[in-house]
Image 1 (tube, rainbow, N blue to C red):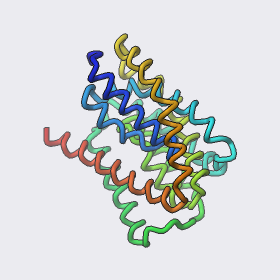
Image 2 (image 1 turned 30 degrees about the vertical axis):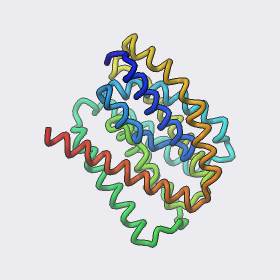
Image 3 (image 1 turned 90 degrees about the vertical axis):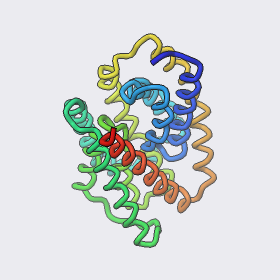
Length: 252
């Protein structure tokens, strides 16, 4: 990666978009900014750039997502699987076929959204399930390391619970605060940052306050149903991006 003006502008825009999504929905949709980053750098370099920036975003986001917005019973079930999943993802990174992982995750996500639409696209509250929570945390940990997409597994567990929009966003935010802090070092080991990448990280830090704040303001404007529909819509976009990555990878 060369530190050029286009690279700086594209990376800054991608980080701003990720921050905006974090402020609005608590995280989990960071993959929406990765297509922008992939224009100027390879996926591994993008992962190395984003790893420490995610931690900075999370720390800034805690000013909005306070303890009262965390669903403790769900986090207790989700976080152990997340930690184990990140460890497995790091160990399997060089052996797993990233294209297959992307396609399977995309198909699962689209099926989940399709079932929601078939039920009338309404927010319904279902009881939490320990096996589902552990599975979601584990899958999120693996996919966040392997395919930069830990959001869909978590969303597929949390959205059917019918949490308030504040608790949904806060729980998601804390979940990824722990996850991003855990995976920062493994990703830096994989990406092996250069001096140019360190400079780009410093520049992109400037996008965090405004991006997170604007996203938070959007969440305040939207009502419960709009937030949930936006989350399901974002899941479709993420799934289509993963599907494209996987299929196009086999065609190259």
